Image (tube, rainbow, N blue to C red; front, top):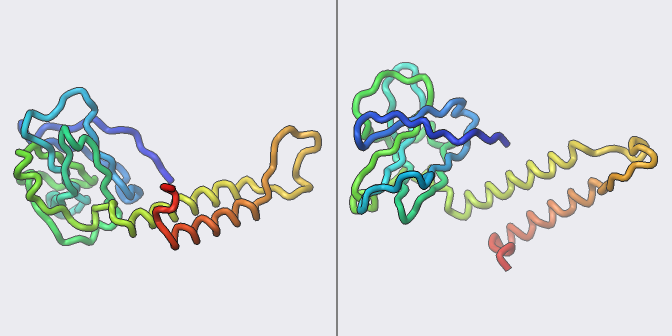
Length: 189
């Protein structure tokens, strides 16, 4: 799992349109967009969030992910499946060819934002995406823990470290997956 730094280097295209580059977008699965608290949107306004994959032969084609507002100051968008999506819009006008992915925010009236329909593959809030994320997170955790596995002969004598048998971690993983399949909300109780 890779984590990237927070990017606040948006460039203004005009008073209501802002873009930033997303470096190494092929390795990004989700984008988190949030207000920093430094400046709220004007009353009655919010920001439509758009994403554009790079195309070395054409100007950016924008896909609507959703929106943020003062009431909803953050959102998480799944972008890993957007590359092949044909739901294209172009709110940022004609731009030069880009060789990097871009994130765009367009400030618009809230009434207009609430009527827009984002591309469905960007919405990570459905249960399938939640379970997919949870399984990937658990797999990553188990793989990480197992990467530190040592045999009993490799444990240094007189060490003060605690060691956990790998089969205990693997059994926990199997049990957690089973419980998640039976009831995706079991962890809330």
